Length: 132
Image 1 (spheres, rainbow, N blue to C red):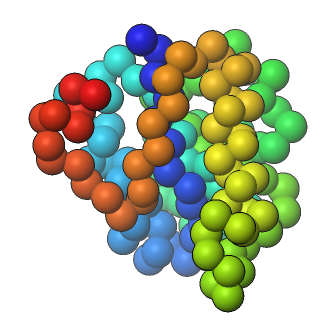
Image 2 (image 1 turned 90 degrees about the vertical axis):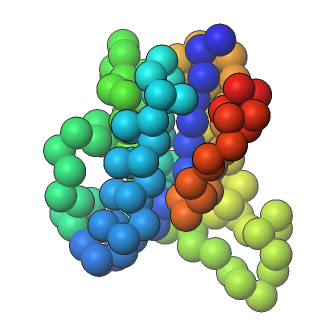
């Protein structure tokens, strides 16, 4: 089954990118679970200049149709930041909803049959979870 794996992201320093998102990329990129899957960071308009990994294919908002295929690791970046309003729970945040809706748009554009969201600070180790 063609599967899209994604996390949401926002980073404004190289340190944050390396400590959270680069670790997520490295862990899942080298895991057998993702051998036949594409990974996306759905990004809230981060400073992409701080990225140090050139293996990540960057897709700017509005460019989805410009690519016939995507790389194994992709970053889809919105043009403007919505951020999170911590006075509301996550389910009521516009930025959170926008990112999750973008996963549907990506899935439709590239014919994914399944979408899996994995938090950027989550490192799954259960075989039962991977088998699902």
